[in-house]
Image (cartoon, rainbow, N blue to C red; front, side):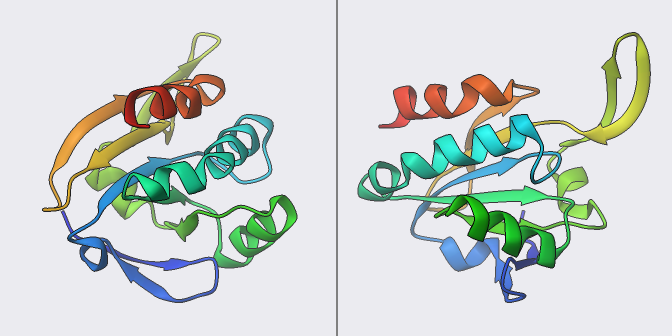
Length: 143
């Protein structure tokens, strides 16, 4: 499941660039929203610990490269942030689809996280999780 997206600096990043390393790939709906900010900040706080265990953190959202650069700078985030404006990678990982909120159905990003091994295989999935709990869950299970 390789892909290429631009990071917050406009540099093309391929998932295959990280073969030989473990990756925590997480999808979040939108930079600067309360839940997404909390999720990214909490993951960034544990960045060094994830790094020591051999993990690379990569966040993906449908935000523009420019917005991601501002988000990363404002909150001093350590992880790589990738722009998936066309939602192609989110769809590839089934992280884009029908959501329900207060009885209404709409299409949107489904907050999801994937743990990928050194060979590029998904070994664990967390689908439709809450922003407020996923960072702690990942830290507890992987660190």
